[in-house]
Amino acid sequence: MALPTLQAQTSPNGKVQVTFHDGALTVSCLHAGQRQQVMSLPVALSTDKALTTEAGEVKYDMLTGKRSHCSNAYTQCTYQLTDGHTLQVRAYNDGVTWTSDNTSSPGLQQDRPHLVDFTTAQNDWLMHWADSYEGFFPKNSNHKEGEHLGYPALFEYKDGLFALLTESNVDSLDAASSFFRSAREGIFEVKADGEGGHADQTLILGSLAEVVASTLVADNSQPCRLEETAWIEPGVASWVYWAYNHGSKDYNIIKKYTDMAVALNLPYVLIDAEWDEAAPMEYKGEKMPMVEAAVRYAIDNGVKPMIWYNSSVGWVNGAPGPKFRLNKPEDREREFAWCEKIGVKGVKIDFFSGDNNLNMRYMIELLESAAKHHLLVNFHGATIPRGWQRTYPNLVSTEGVYGAEWYNNVPTFTKRAAAHNATLPFTRNVVGPMDYTPCAFTDSQHPHITTHAHELALTVLFESGIQHLADRPESFLAQPEAVKNFLSELPTAWDETRLLEGYPGQNAVIARRKGERWFIAGINGTDGEMTFDLPKYLKMLSIKKKQLTVFLDGKSAKSPWEFRSSGKKGKLSPVTVPARGGFVIAE
Image (tube, rainbow, N blue to C red; front, side):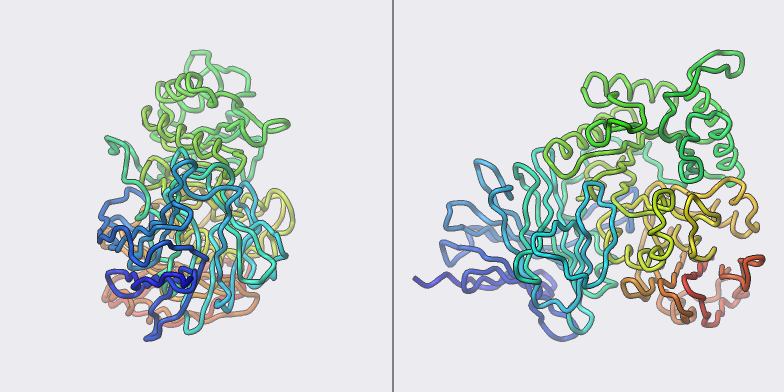
């Protein structure tokens, strides 16, 4: 019996095409004048016609993220499968999503994995899965059969075409999925970490610039569920943990970080783990828990405090606290009400345990409960964003990244950081906010060998609704006025994002716009010098006759900075950036 062949499903702009032939769904992309096959998966259709076909468009605004006004058009088709279930496919202008509907247990299941075939790709960047999604994205690392891998997964094809595989539209009934290397290189088994739901496998397609600019993960997720969002304010925070692992149980250390926020005009300060262990103290003649005194001090000085919690579902034994304050709905309600009462503006919740149903449901419950009490949320030790930043815009950031915190833990990061930093804009940060905790000019437990300008560039290169600055107050306050002014004026939510140049692991130049003002940041991820064509970048952005300041690396450790001005005519010259160096251009 011949397998059905259907008419191709094509995105509204004609770029993305989905075809069915010989028992497989095949995705292709029109790029550089040629249509290339990108991915296929086995699909058993029962008819040669789609059950339903429709066209649609999503339009919405974001309070945080890489773009404030988002839109995307798609065609949607539903197909009948031989097992009685259906397959829904959306061909967007910059990618494709698909999900299988199973009435008894919708979508993907642990015992019903499906294969995705990326054998036409020439290169890949894949991360070994961990429940915290903290790992590197090595190029062509020849993962072993059965190895567990995590999203997002980046694939390169000829002529500069790229595909990024991830997941979107995960809801409270879903377990998230990940994938495993099969016996054959380039073919992977996608499995849910529990009972399935309506989560969509999501493939972003195009040039690197198109992949970096894509908002497909949010486009394909549920609209905002919050009735009122005026209280959600992105911003920069001072952050104690990188320099003082146990500093948040010391009022005087927290006070230093609050004073730094005041000096640099930063809106937030984060009080991290172990604040519950501090003894009560007196503040302005009144005895109270230390954390309340620290919160009061921040508020009295015009800084918004955020505090840390252990989720108590992942690392519990031997882990820091406070613990078990959020797990039960009644305890969570009481804790968040207390936060709101004393003036806390957000919560950082840490140590989840993977992609299973319990974690997905719990995280959404936390977002919904926090929103009732006007609390921002930053998930740490957690899965990557899968579209919740649109549905619950109080989710201002998620860790899910091997970030600067790892200078605390092992010496591995010292030599790998520069190349890793030049890979993240093309992988992890594409899918949503990333709390990497950038910008350290001094050392933590293990040294860094990236330059000052490289570190400063990360504050623009990496997108996060709350951008936590990692270094010590003494370090930031000792920087030149130009650097301190830059940090004081740094936006963390953007109207537009554009990749100007780059390749994973080598270099990245990204421009982000807030209002009429552009910020351009570039890093060298290699161990050799690299030249960056600044005039070309200005031309690409149509920036003319504006006074610009360029932050560059100095010639020595004693003189780590060089500053150049474009003059009123806005003219710049190409620059040579040292190994693991960087630059920033700011209006």
